[in-house]
Length: 104
Image (cartoon, rainbow, N blue to C red; front, side, top):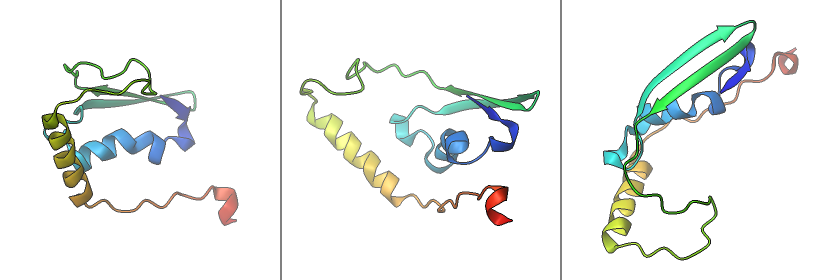
């Protein structure tokens, strides 16, 4: 991803790294973030994120499910356990930074 250097922060910029710190790979239910590299050139910031490869089959080729999925009970049990872990994880609320013009 890229952004002007002075805008390279906040939710969109840091979400993957924040999620890795907060949740890890959720026992294999979330691809681990293996690395992050930031580079800066001529006022532009660039970020490359390297997630672990997922060796599971894709449930849908489309972001919108267009047919019912035939998932085993074990899948639903695993997702329920993952959601329990997510709900038990404490994350600090993030307050967006105000643009400098808003504080003047």
